[in-house]
Image (cartoon, rainbow, N blue to C red):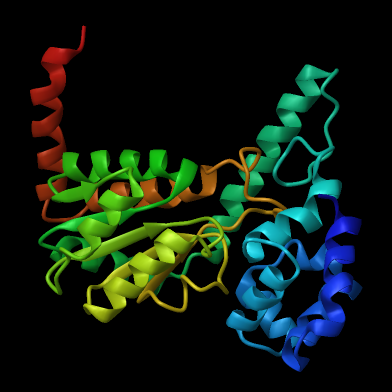
Length: 282
């Protein structure tokens, strides 16, 4: 479905919408391109309604949820793009393309450096150090990054648990206690699995940390600590084209800060584990 069809779907049900839902419809009809780049929280604020109202409008227009409406709004504009940051490149000039794309990634890392709050980073580190067990959660293709993070934290001696399947993650979530910590990685901050688990952490008073691109999302409203991992230019769609370099940079930052801890215990654990794993290497 392209942008025009998404607008037409909303217009087709407009007369059946309630007053608050019409506010969302009016905004999307007038600002379809902007709405495609918003989180559900941002669209709700722009329309002066609740997030639940945005979700109801999306479903009444025939979409499974807001994300699916967002996909429909953005699809037409995004199909020609091959980079997440909307950087213009010439694929026929490989040298220039490589330089341009790497420069864009360097700008992304600079955006992370400018956006991270030192106090939030310090709090996140303290939560991780104090945790009896660190639970890491993610959904979809971000699961690979969660597994990477779990491996590194375990190597430094931080007992860490991670599972790829949603059902396993939900089971793990209900095993968390106030003595543990919860790390959630989500680009959009709107993934149902991660927000549901964040709600469990909130209800069970488990210290929670989010690594996310979006500072206004359902996830950031639920967690205690937010580590922003923005990209230098706004991403239209969080799909395969949008790499996870910025989230990985935040994970690596936490790992390096732990390894640099003045106690030396995390660095020593890392060396010990590396020696144990040496027999598997040539």
